[in-house]
Amino acid sequence: MKIELPEPLASYLAAEKNTDIEILERCFSKDATVRDEGQTYNGLEAIKAWKQASQAKYQYSIEPLSSSQKGQIVTLLARLTGNFPGSPIELTYTVELADDKIASLEIR
Image (cartoon, rainbow, N blue to C red; front, side, top):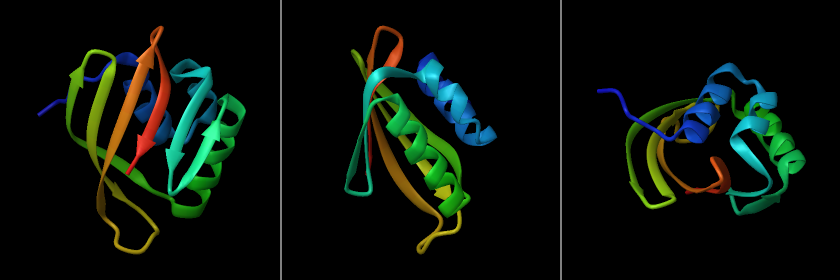
């Protein structure tokens, strides 16, 4: 079953698959916020650094399982498989969209 996602989120997942952090410029607004593992990352440069460090540390892949959207909020359930304790795990990505970009992303 193919999951339909808004373009910024689909591009974000493509960047994850290709480990291409430059694609993040097309996905996130310049002042976006990411919350992951108890940390908050503000702004595009901080988000790129977070993503690069996460990819290097965990060597993970993401498999989308389901998604829903209410207005500008998208909730994605995904399975992460990688080099970390408890792998694979299922995480919820809560994304707020604004102006066709990701304004905030929370992973829990």
